[in-house]
Image (cartoon, rainbow, N blue to C red; front, side, top):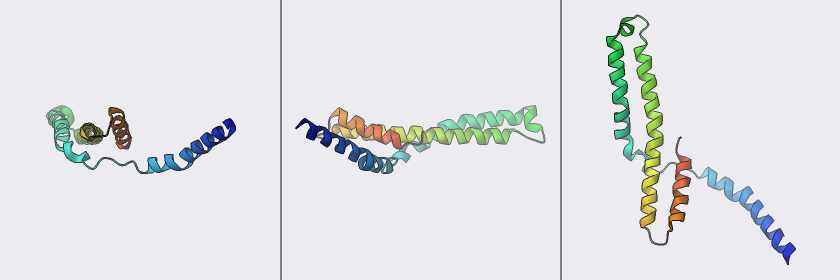
Length: 124
């Protein structure tokens, strides 16, 4: 009886590793509402980038022929895009978590697992 139980546990573990786990990893996607927060994060982040660019253009560096101000602005806005993609996605995951808590039959533990799976799909 003990041997049969141990064999069943081993088979179940192998099935989980070989079949269930790869399917879960392939199905990870960012939440459908991930773009809800994009406007505010990006505008809040890009504003200071533009201010630094304007300040650079007023400095002696901005008057040089090989003007570094444009590349500084591009680098700053690219960093904003990456940061916002991550934070917007996580904000959407938090909304899904809150919605989960309001649904009957879900425990906080269930909802935490859903949020963690969602976080794993975010680009950060």
